Length: 172
Image 1 (cartoon, helix red, strand yellow):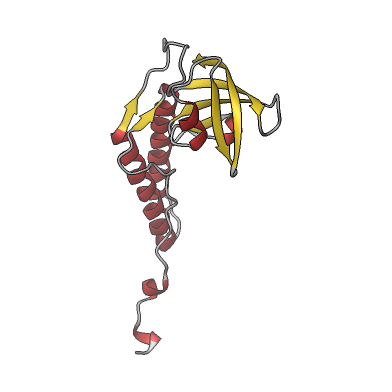
Image 2 (cartoon, rainbow, N blue to C red):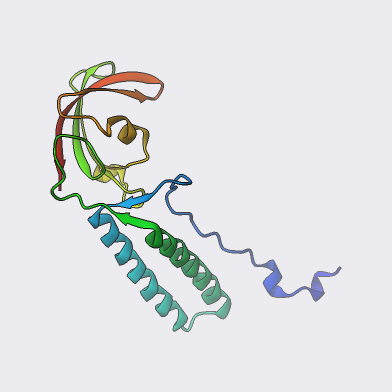
């Protein structure tokens, strides 16, 4: 068939909507109070952006593409919000590593002796390596969950085994 009879819209590729951080199937979507606030703020920002795009005077095809992307992001976010299970971190007992804990680890064997790691165990949507926030489903978070202060925990990092001392456990 000649391209002369094809609609112009047929040539436009469907926009790719970036996926949210992976949450393994069957795993509860735990969030900290800060994480839930971040998700709600993101929802408000996406709704504002959608309104702005809907009222813009831009090209109809470009507006439709942008709206498709925003609506996809809103849909993914609403699914995440609907499954969010809030875990209050204030008042948690500081004797054991749990969701929401800020943990300080010191390497005692393997790796670089004396190396200090400090991170907070959070939900998948609020995880950020640069901010020292690790998702509760990450291997290092799983390895330390349940540990107590002064426990020695074995980590498996990049194919190597490392023993770390749990130096401190705090909750915000």
